[in-house]
Every structure is written in C-alpha cells, then in structure tokens.
Length: 408
Length: 230
Image (cartoon, rainbow over the protein chains, first blue to last red):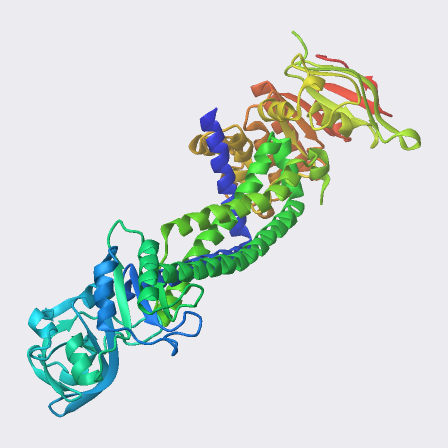
C-alpha cells in the first residue's frame, strides 16, 4: 500500500512536471514571482550577515576585550576638551590598583614628519609601551618589541606599520634602518603585521610606535598621556574593572560626590554589542520587506493555480470518473504548486546569493552565506507552494465529477 | 448466480417544489455478469441519469443500488471512487481524453491510480491499444487522431484495467456508419471474449441490434425490457 502510494505521488509529480512544461511561459512568469521573493530575502539576510561579520571583524581589529580611558566628559563629544590629560603617575596607579586589569597601555599621539633618505611622509606617531601591542592586538611581523632599556629612554627606537614602511622604503628592507622622526633619529626595531582598513575606511597601518618616554621628551615635549587602554584578566568581570577604574580616576582627579566625571570609559564589548544590535535589526527589517515580495509571489502562484483548475475542470472530471479520489487530485495540484515554488526557491537562492556576493565584493565586505538560509529558503518556498496551492487544489478535489465532465 | 447490478425503486430527483424534476421515477433492473445491454429511449427519458448512477458518479435520491451485493448508498465518496477504479470502465460520447497527452499515456491513466509500476503500465496500455487496433498510433495526441480512433483510445482506456462492467454512453454517436460497426464489433468481441458486462446507451436501433438485451426508458421509467439472457 505504501509503495502504491509512493507511485501515485511519483505519478502526480510526473504529471505536474508535464503540465509545467506544457505552459512554459506562464509557468516561468509564475516562478519569477517566487524567484524575486526568495532572491530578495536571501540577499538581504546574506548582506545583513556580511555586515555584522564586518562589524565583528572591525571590533576584533580594535583589540579584543579592550577598555578605553579618555579625558573629557562622556557626553560632550569624543575626546572632549574639558578634561585634563592623564599623567604617567595615573598609569602607574592603574597598574597597581586596578587588579582586574591584565595589560595597561598608555598612549599619546602626535603627527610628525618622518624622513628616510630622500623620502618623507607625515604620519601619526604614538608613544606607548609593549603592553600597547597586546591591548590593541598588533603582532610583530619582523624584528622585536622594545627592550627595557629602550622603554627607559635609551637608544631611540621605533616600530612601524606596514603602510608607513611602504611609503618610506618601497620594497626595500626596513628593519634596523634609521629614520628621522621629527628631530629624533631612531632605529626601526620592529615591523607590524598588516591589519587593513578600519570600519571607517582609515588606513590602520600608517603609524609609528615609539617608547612613551622618548615620545614625551623628544616629540611631544611634555609628559601628558592622552589616553589609556586596558584589557581585562580572564575570568574577571569587565564591568567590575570599569567600575574600579572610574572610582580610581575620580579619586585621583579630585571629583567630589555628585560631580560629573571629566573623563570617560568605553569598552569594545559595549561597542560591538551596540553595532550588532543595529545590524540585526536592519537585517530583520530588510528581510521582512523582502518577505512581502515572497508573499506577493505566493499569491501569484495561487492565482495561476486557480486559473489552471478552472481551465482543467474537464480533465479533473475525467480523472475522477476513472477512479481518482479527491485527495489524489488534491495531491496532483499541490505537487504542481509546490514544484513551481520550489523551482522558484532554488533559482531565487542562486540569484540572491550571486547578488549578495556581487554587492559584498563591491563594498569590500566579507561575503557570508550561511547554509541555513539556503535551507530556510527551500522550506519557505515549499511552504508558500503548500499554503497558496492548497486552496485551488482543494477546489479541484471537491468538484462534482458529472459537472466537471460537462464543463467546457 | 446473483446479479452484478441490482436497482430497486431507484429515484433521482433534481430541484425542489415547483422546479422538481423526476429524472428517474422508480427503476427496477438486474444485470447479470456478462450481459450486453442496450439502453434506449428518447432524450430526457433518464438514460444518462441512470448511467451516472450505475457508474457511481451520481447517487439515487431514493431506492437501492447494489453493485455485486454492495449497497452503494452506504459507501463514502472515496469508496465510490475506488469502486470506479477497480470495477468500472467508462466510455463517453465525447471521448473525454486528456488533450495534449499521447494515446498510450491516456490509456495508462487508470493504471496510475491503481498504483501499477511504470513499466507494467506501459505494457498493459500498449496491449489494450493493440486490442482496439491502434498500436501504431500509441504516441499520437488525440488531436492527431480521427473521431473513431479517439473513441477506440477511450475504449482501450476503459478496458485496460479489466473492469467488471463497462458503461458506454453513446459510444458510436459521433461516428460514420463504417466506424460505428467497427466499434460495435469491438464491444461485442470484448463482451464475448473477456466476459465484461457492457451497458450501452444508444438511440440507434441498428446499434442496439448488436445487443441481446434492450431496455427502453420513457419518462424516468423502464417502458420495455426484452429481458435477461434471451
């Protein structure tokens, strides 16, 4: 009995294929509606995934699990002017007192002209310690980190980003060469791995890193620290570290109870969470809008199937008279509707995937096509077929055989 | 031997009140297995309604229709469909073949619903077409066949399942005289060789001559019955 049922089902599919091929033009127009619907859903979801992946990558580039301490009140714009800069003593205090911090890296920066031979290039100069590499997630591609002696201020040394290196050295070797930074001659002891462009499109690899002491004395001319970066020890709560840091800084900067901070603390987790909420919401919204076109495609299928039932009333009468049960007629028409919409689903998946791929290439985003959306599209388009094919199929199955046979 | 078909007091009424039409008004009939019956009568006398009831496409408003001792009133729509599938064959006046579908595919159709495997289906369909002399037209669509050929495809479709009873509604109605005799000889042959009970509506006495039993309808009643097995 089961095998005879499967034969009936198979025969229904064969008949459906035959019917679709008989009306190629009409069928392709019907399918087109589903193709557009599925393609836009797929493209939107895939693009949304790509966007959130890019956000994740950008945050990872900024450094994992990082806390930023900057002068200026939090709501008066970034790096707001009103707060005084930090001091080396602040850094020392943080290292000693904020126990949840793994690495603490002070940073000061200033643009300066860098000269090598007859080439010169203006680039941001950053002063910090080796901790900065770990906190900001930079890796040494060639050479080494700073020695303690260098950090102490002896033998001016620097490390260089790959873009700066290219500007000054082209394809030549740069390690152990001496460049003039501002009016300091310093030896290149390390070269960084390339990170690429940031989320905002800035070249992250164009900078020079110097020991903070040397930078303060020879470039900046004062001992200010413009910002401090921290990472959190594994197993310690990020919020706890942030709270400790805030309390310490309020105390050190003599901010009384009830007074506003003149510094602010931000962390990448918070930033990443905010960004991913935005992309997720956007993906859902665009996917929803695209879903409307899938609905319209489904109504198109229903329309064509209703026309088809009316057109083929006599055929249905013949089938009923030779012993087809209502459910078998229903199955045949349902198979046709589901077949059409699955075809549309597969084509739409290919079109949507290709469109999303092209768009991500064009925008320089990572392409993401999670396999589950292919499955979802397949199930969804099949569902559309069942949903919108059922009504016309039931209409066909309920026909009275005598009246159906008389139908012209 | 018990009758294959037994009608007792069968009525079929359409409409209600003033517009009431009594298409069948108390029909008693028995058909024995292997009979070849011609049903005759003027149009509107209830022949076609009776055929629809015999074919389980319609059901009586009152009375009893037993097919092989099964009371059809007690069967569901699905069970009636199965009865049509396994025991009945139809030949329609207007052929009722699927358009744009080859002769052999048309003949295969009832076997599809019986769940017969594709290869066996094809063999049996070709065999049925051979029986009606159309084996060399198997892959032609109905539009490429003459009326007589289409009627023979319809007969092949009706007999391919080996039904117990064949119901033919004016099978020769649209054909020229030579073709009519071909079709009638074919039906007589099927009746004699395969023992299929055949009930055939016609209003041509020459065609009814082929049948051993003739039933005349008038105003929804049986006016004359030459009787079984004469």
